Length: 255
Image 1 (tube, rainbow, N blue to C red):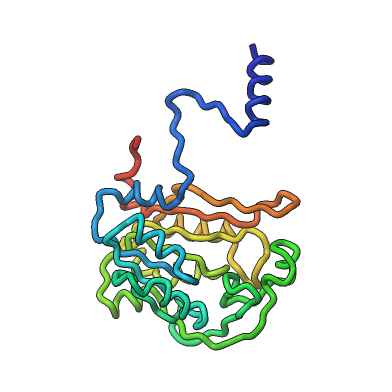
Image 2 (cartoon, rainbow, N blue to C red; image 1 turned 60 degrees about the horizontal axis):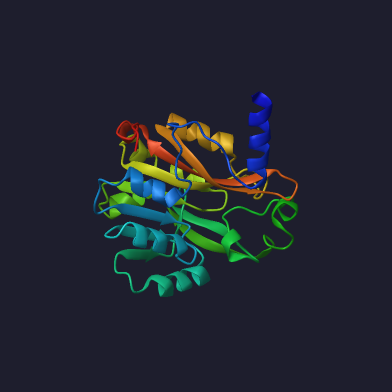
């Protein structure tokens, strides 16, 4: 019987199929669908899109969660100008040409060949071998103004962030640290962020550091998505969704 099961499994694997025990829980591997599922009972959501680039993610949220108020932050002016044009028809999306970090002030910003790889961190010498030659080559370094989430929500009278989406190319933990008070007061429900696993930027924070910090800050890992690998098979990047523990108790149920 074991041999037959093994043969069946091998055949199915070749065609991309898997067998699951009836009744076991499997989750949807769409991170946005999961966020909608978790927050299904909420209306008038507040969403922070940090590292908005051209507004791709803001538009996904806008379509999936209608009625949400979306704050999009993009520090690089050329990308910000495109962002403004892409979302100008949506009055619920507000755009800010500023970087979010753990301090308020000004910081050097590295503009790279591929604008999606721009970062407040200098490119790591191994980045080319991991992501492809020239993609993260720095064209220029420019000064960019920064603020923190704690300072921003205080100045704008924001009580809750239902979704904090982060794609800041290696500085995601700094942004979270800039929301220290908001997290302590359970003002952040979900954190959806990119985690770079292999060396891409100088002084980037790695997966174990981010997981440890979020666990100690009262968040539980819900799921991981969009696993990216090098040609040799190394995991190089994931997206991860975390739930505030104070809110997570309402989610531990069969959907």
